[in-house]
Image (cartoon, rainbow, N blue to C red; front, side, top):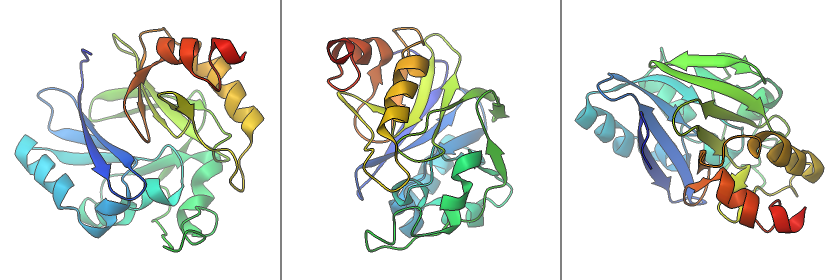
Length: 222
């Protein structure tokens, strides 16, 4: 899949969560999206990648505040204090509450530094020369957002909303299945079929493939 961005995935062993490092070809700054727990324990995989590519961190973006997606926030902020930490407005309280972010109930309490910036639908981010548009798609968590890069093809950094052949869980405290289903069908499925989705877990997929075949929200389920 061709894209104007360099995208590297750091797979975290805890929960198989995907951390994305994203930068423009020839650029010297990168975005880190959803830094997982492993990076909170050992930043070396990230620092090695940044060193090899001659990059620094321009911003840390969280699609949502569950512990497996924010576990590396604190370590990265310590290493790159100028990089703003960004999360959805209705999700910010999860960063500093290990019960709300579900890490304490799973037995590994995690807290993050507070957000430097919060966003909501319609906001536009531009860090490292990369433009990202924000969509609110709650349901897996109360204030989940996704980041859309308008390119050819369109790219979505989707967190735990839409997976290849699946969707995010909606049986957690603060979850709402109806909101999740509605957001996927009305917002994500409105994007072009060739839109590439980089999910929080599992392999990349496309909007067209999921709209046709996803057993939860695809054509056969509507």
